Image: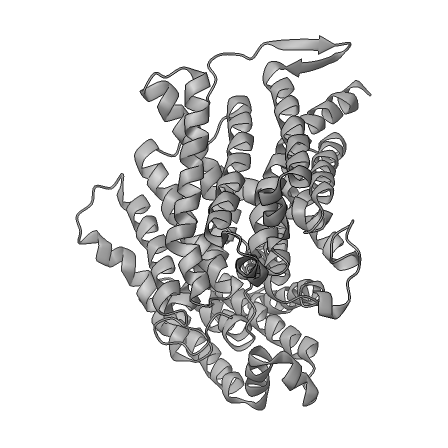
Amino acid sequence: MTLLAQLLLNALCNAATYSLLAIGFGLFYRSLRFFNIGFGAVYVVTSYAVITASQALGLPLFVSIPSGLIFAGLVSVLMDKLIFHPLDKHGSSSGVLLVASLGIYIAIINLIALIFGNEIKILSKGMEPSYSLGSLIITRIQIIQILVGWLTTILFWLAIRKNTLIKAIWAMGKVPELIRALGLPYNQMRAIVFFLSALFAGLASIATSFDVGFDPHVGMGALLTGAVAVIVGGVDIYWGWICGASLIAFLQAIGVWLFSAKWNELITFALLIITLLLRPHGIFSQKRRAEEK
Amino acid sequence: MTLSLNLVVGFGGLLSLCHAVFYGIGAYATTLLMLKAGFGFVTSVISAVLITGTFSLAIGVPALRFRGDPFVLVTLGFQTIIFTIMYNWIGLTRGPYGIPGIPRPSIAGYQITTLPEYLFLTYIFLVMVAIIIVVIYKSPFGMALKALRDDEMAAEGLGKSPFYFFLAAFVIAGMIASIAGSLYATYVTYIDPTSFTLDESIFLLVILLVGGAGNLKGPIVGTIFMILLPEALRFLGLPDTVAPNVRQILYGLVIVILMFFRPQGIAGEFKLK
């Protein structure tokens, strides 16, 4: 019973991090309607930027973490300006954008592997201090994960409700032409979407990197977790993404309890396939008429 | 393998990311039948084809309810699921330890041992498969697939059922990939799951995107190009530690540039829609 409780506590932390991934992915998937594999690259870039800033340049963490995040944000915006936006203006379909994003992902992570090597690195040094909650154990980084994850989720939700520009970004996905017709700055909005998406990916990346470390290839797994969370929850529903992320974390915990951790990826994808078969719009979406799609 | 994936991607217009698992199931099925059940080479290959065909049917039925992005994700999902099973079901596949000691093929009593003999065998299979594929490409079936790819609703209006045509293409493609798997297993005499990963599926897809899909020349051009590219890069004289990464970087950039200037690939006729 204690094992299950411990696993569920870990699931709470994972859910926080997965929620960040889901928001990051959902931002561009909803607003710009294409599957951007470069998100995985941005995820990895953040951790490497932070480790360079803190270990190679010797900057303190409260400087290297924001620098890493901003750097990743800039990389993300650059990817859009150089690749996705031009292709989009060209009239390319989402399939072309997906393949192009795959290409840039491969190029970036191999560049990172070239510079930093393939071995696993970890941002923190030594053992993490841990605290006991009765018979359960939680480490300091897990507490940070929970706080950062859930706080950011709630803050962003408030931003969607209150801030006009973010509301416009939120609505962008439905009728992109209307943005220009209404005189809103489309190019800046695209840049904001990519920057914000990178920030969320980056936060998740840093949180995980402190906990279990990272290597150049972890981006794909992070991307896919975020993607499954968004699709399972429903592409258009913010809290759907969060529920999707939590569901993945929860099911993985049950999976570890019943079997072992090596089936985690299978559980994530089995959830995706079952959801797509039973409720293709996502668990929390409403069925739409064909014209509305 | 690219000729078969071409049926699904080029002719069907569907980006499938699970082709490597059909290759893998073919390899594992052949291996286990030859080692555990004592089947001969030819019997194993045929049985493996049927087993893989069943799997591709089982995957195709749910996957083909979708098109576009969800289809890619579902095939990616199955790729991951089956790979995870291959890697972790140690009782059946010995997982990461792999299965060594696979016997070389022996056809009608003639044992194939040397490399030239093996090359000859592979080319015989390639020619047989190529003939079957060309027949399919040019047949009414192939035409119907292309019609469905270009305008599904119109083709459906003419009476071509998308689901059955796509499913047939998917299953045939899987079965042919299985033959490649059988040849691979008996050539290297050792298999393990790392040959059948998502990266492999992506590589096959990239070959088709670079060389072109939807016709006969495309996959062949693509395969030759992608196999020769690393060899050509050898001439750059890069140190061994950086060469694989540089190769991958170039490979990624080639994909991006291709999407800008020639989304139909070098010799293809299918433009990614």
